[in-house]
Length: 383
Image (cartoon, rainbow, N blue to C red; front, side):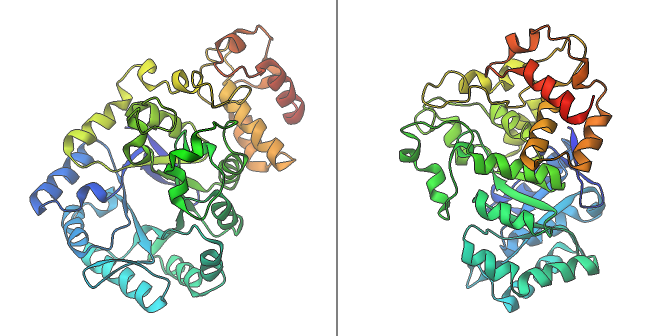
């Protein structure tokens, strides 16, 4: 297992492969504890808990007893349990009761991430960020009852507005190769409507590209939901591309996006968890999502750096994907942010060392003019 840092959360490190909670719902206590124990053995330490289901929370409390410091818990604010079912709410009394119930049932006095639950609409955004809920989140963070403030969303326009407030430390966002080609919508069902893909697209939608780059610049970590598109990406007849991805291609795609810290997978069994963790053992070819993205005629990605790493190895050792990422971040900002300059400086080799041999361009599956990019980066960064 590999781990990545949540930069704005006191350096909390989370497993790249993490767990959504839906696979635990409906399990017996014995099954639940066995799954959790195996997850910990596999090195998984990051768990999202969007559900307010009291049985789930009780079982999770038993699972983490004696090892609270070894797991990173992401709980949701605005997800409540009423009349035996889930309720999405902005009523502060219900929000507070649900949060306190969560801590009580988990047997802990804090959550690592307090995640504002499911914000896709502009009016909902205003209700939260101009009202009591965001103040409550800040209060919880000041008291140490949450270590970081997060928000979950499927809408890049709303997610970007939230990041721009400067309040968010973590963004839970729906990411996969298909969704990345779609524009903003307040209706998340648009993402999996195959009609929206039938005429093809012109690559990653600018709104999504801007969101990822903004999060990278601001140090806001993204944890990914919908990595498999609810399973649609894994089936040719349901995939918007008309071609099935495998699980490892989906994970690799997400982990090569800017700002992504972890992929939340909804595993329903120990076998599914073990299969996903084999991501670190399978061949590079099995993880290679570019094999699909360069072969589907309706979806155009030519000239776009996907940070996939196929340009390697560089003759002089430049990490071309990283240089391109920092270049794009600076171009999007219209200046070189201090944090980006620091990251660039820490690279072992810099763009000015490029000898224009062209090997990287021969290897690039998306036809990126890398030599020109290196010249541009050397000019912008000064070396």
